[in-house]
Length: 211
Image (tube, rainbow, N blue to C red):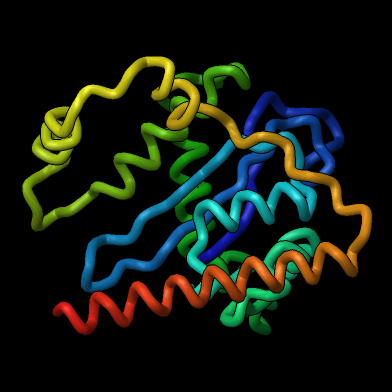
């Protein structure tokens, strides 16, 4: 699993990347494995603070996953207690995308999708387009039934009320809680990770026993 951030919006003279006035998005991408082609999650965020990353990682990153990130301090704080999280450095002579190859690929494709298909989007509509991109990415399967069959299967599973759909699927991530006491925050994060690891391990053992 790779975690990173990206920015979308109109160009700002003299600014680029972190600190600009574009809309920030938090990105998590998993590698392909025996269970499928690998999935991605992208959420529009109000900022790129440790609190926002923590909420995002708790929702979209498994506590037992091997997680890579680029050493950005807020991500490091959010993943401080993850047992298999590792900050990366660009190898000597390598490109900046070497360490987070999958995340940078998704970021590049998403940026091209939004700019090429919609020629830019207002912030209120951005999460909906991002969700469509993530669904397509997570359901790609060259040797499978195809995206049309996957979409038909999803649609046939049951009706979801419009209010529930808008409040969950297309809702941007809310602002993360600001960290005021780093010691208490670290202890809370460690406790949450311990519980998450225990639950994931229990579920994995149950699946192993039943299989």
